Figure 1 (cartoon, helix red, strand yellow):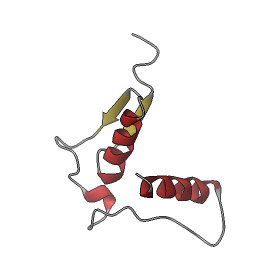
Figure 2 (cartoon, rainbow, N blue to C red):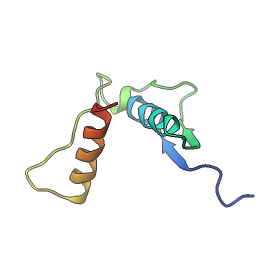
Figure 3 (cartoon, rainbow, N blue to C red):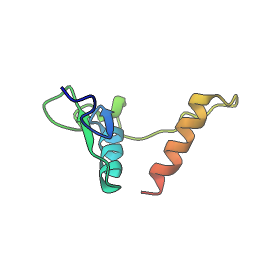
Length: 77
């Protein structure tokens, strides 16, 4: 078995996962998208509206900085 099968692994084929996988593939990455449901976008990315909502707090953390950077990048797609 090879030590790696792809450049990027995306877990979840909801709105955010599918968008991330698509953006990576457009940039030439070999992407493996893993989704538990038989089809993509079946659970609306964990919320009832299928939105990507930023997690921004008044206390910066590594998680908040990573989420903010990802949200900003996604808005540019």
